[in-house]
Length: 227
Ligand code: DX5
Ligand code: ZN
Image 1 (cartoon, rainbow, N blue to C red):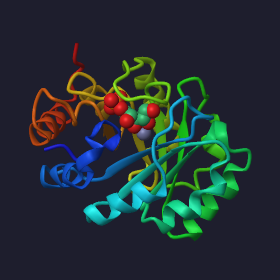
Image 2: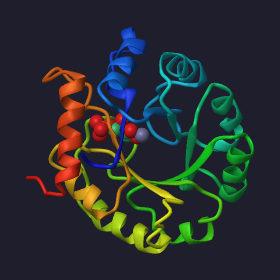
Image 3: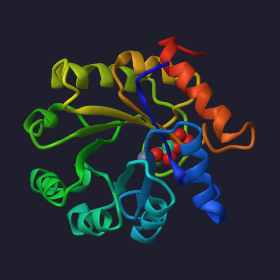
Image 4: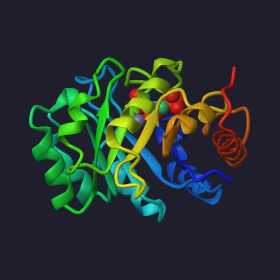
């Protein structure tokens, strides 16, 4: 069994039975629940906010991993921590005062993450390594589920791993988000990703949530590069 954290994204879940879908993931061995927040400005899509985050918090004991794809996320981090977020990630491109926002997330009692779009260089992470718990390497351009994995993300994960140091103590985790399925999970895990977000590969009509999570975990453990 692989040691990676599997974080199903509820973006692809059936919102009409959200609590049930979250519980299905928990029963299937998911480690975190990933919540995608979009504002229609930073990304074209609009999704959900603190109220749905609180509903997810009520539905599970797992850590709730909130991914803020919103402009000026500093205005909202408190609302999401109050709603029960365990981890709050903000986009580097959306926040001028990233250092302050990360510090604030930690002061509020949550873990702090920095998300990077595919076009964003990784160097700024070197300035923030003491202030963050998680780096989110976006392997699609954020905004929608079900997009195609960007291959260059594999090398980016390796470079982030190098930049952060081996981090044998697991001080800063690397999360990869977008296009993760059985064909990509192995290669990103082998490159150094600790947390795999998966939306459409977990919640779909092809198989049950339990089967899909088991398939992903097996693929992550294989280290293989899929087709
Ligand atoms: C994309 C979101 C992702 C999304 C992933 O903007 O940040 O978390 O839910 O969906 P899949 O796994 O379908 O690419
Ligand atoms: Zn996400």
